[in-house]
Image 1: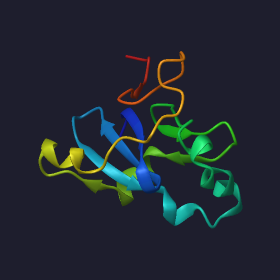
Image 2: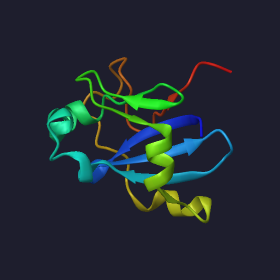
Image 3: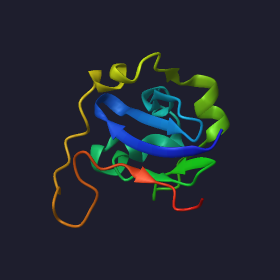
Image 4: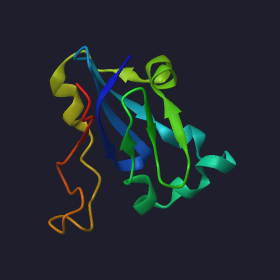
Length: 109
């Protein structure tokens, strides 16, 4: 699976869209007890997720492969299901950083 878009949501969920058009939610909370993911307990750090196409990563060094996400995400059956969780509350919207409603898209074709 190639990740097209990843957007942080409340309660340590990520909204993920794959290149083949599937969308779903991935629960990062299950990983927060592990040392490498501990910095993500800070919501400001969690929202800094970056899309690498075949992985996602955070500046703190935590990362997840697309294979891990694909194996454990909850795929939406209908596109409207994706709206049941509000977008992460972005404290710096409009400051040049990714803000509410923004998603991070992979720049590679």
